Length: 127
Image (cartoon, rainbow, N blue to C red):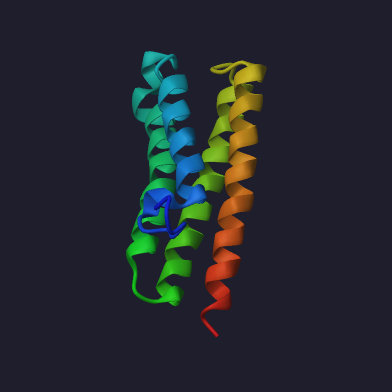
């Protein structure tokens, strides 16, 4: 974020993108320890879903209309929910510990709230 003006000039200035990027990094770290047979299963799916969140936020940010922004931010929210669902699977099949689950679940919850706020604010400009 531009320190002097406080204006958001890039997608990476968005808090929704920053927390989601932290989640991506954590997902990559966690999935490195998944069993080898999951490489093309849960590992790949979880990584793709997490990266999709940040990608859709970035793409939405660059769109010209708020209607388009909302569409991409909503897709990011869907991918965030998909990531959350897959984290439950990873926990339940014992690929991650309860403490690892709790740590990433907290970030997912925070990202969900921030992204929902971004969607709501963007929608307010549509009408």
